[in-house]
Length: 253
Image 1 (tube, rainbow, N blue to C red):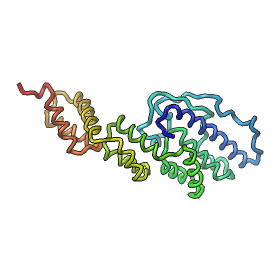
Image 2: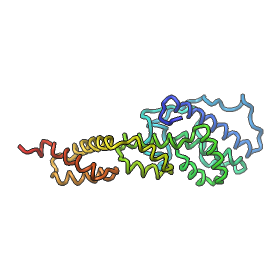
Image 3: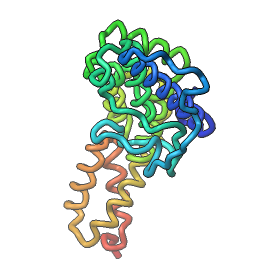
Image 4: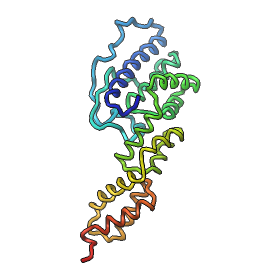
């Protein structure tokens, strides 16, 4: 189940929101000693739709959502507004697995996450490692946590949206805790020809803001920009040289 399939995104979010509501009800019922509500009394999973602005999976906490958020355009999330992450603090006697499930579902309702990211979040919330492993294993079984799909999507999004080269993409995958074998497979989407074509687009766009500058200054700034995006000098310098030589202001009569 790939994150990039538009038809399945709504289904994934609807299931996550419904399960999140269920987990919240269970956690609060256990904490208060109130019997679990019957099916007819539970909040309907697909009621009260809310509009989420922005791109991809909706608004998220600063510093948590990857800046490469996926498919463009606003999307709808089904189900109630997710509760805060500190469910365990509100209901200290709640079942540990239910609390962990609620935290994971809230994270996934905001943006795709790798398993490593979710493990870190659960650890920050004080979840036991055994509980975290058990809950994340289950989420992996049902396809809501899928590092292969996550890695493929990250590479596509960062390469097309940010113009990152393979070196920078590999760094991003490592930062998100993606296994090396999975990372290598995802990076196979980007070939040398793709890198050069993307570098040429980046250089052309940047050059439009540097009209009238000395060629040496233009070259230096362009080289720095491409280096920050992970391009090697082997790719960067020929692209820069061809672009600058092709400018009307630098052509020799």
